[in-house]
Length: 326
Image 1: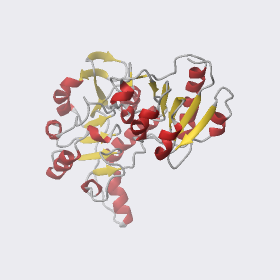
Image 2: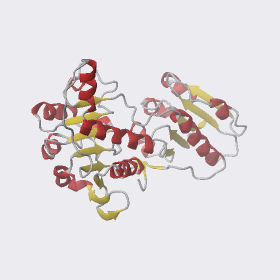
Image 3: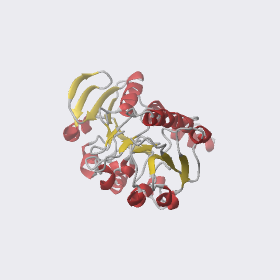
Image 4: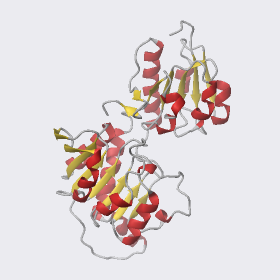
């Protein structure tokens, strides 16, 4: 690393990072340049570090030819699919993510969705608004089976949460294994089709890679129980949305809770807004009070490691698209 103080670029959208005065005040930085997507190419020349605060921006790929000195990119997200373009993947630039910030909030969100489905809270809410007293029976959660696709930290937190409410949890990961501390059993990704018919809830918490894009398509949905529900808190393109809409309309699956979509915001024309048994939320499963501050704290810790010549935390395996070991 050069002995010259480095320039840092912060890519932001409509909002700036909280507590950014702590970034600006670091005397070890030559400068901190704040840039929106349309100004990123102007800000990158000479910069050795880039903090991608604009969470899902595609601007880095477009501005990449101007990144003549970059050594480190930190993403304020767990998923980094928007950064895995060939020029960055094939470079020597280190990419880190914000693994750890979203694990527990997302697990709580999934547990809430499972309980909402089983206890039919949506119908209770609708009946209350209509002032209708209609007794119903609901489903047990204890003893039901969940299949969690993705065995990284988020998937593990989800597995622990679902186990705590009495569910039997199975994982889907790169390598099959028995006696996993969080999942019990993990089946290999190639055996997903065999595992789907066992699940009452299929939860997607996998990163978006070439291998996982379109993972849940018509063939996968046909393998699921007609009483099963699909929950996606990973990335929208893990699911072929047209196939899911068809399966929901045909009764091939009982419902879906989707926090992520192929196109975000979800277009008003999407049938997912109105289909029975569907819960739509605006990519918020990991966003709890204070989450932005936590993201900045993690970045500051990594910035200190970068400035002192140590390896930062959460280094992404760029050829896989996620942190190794997750």
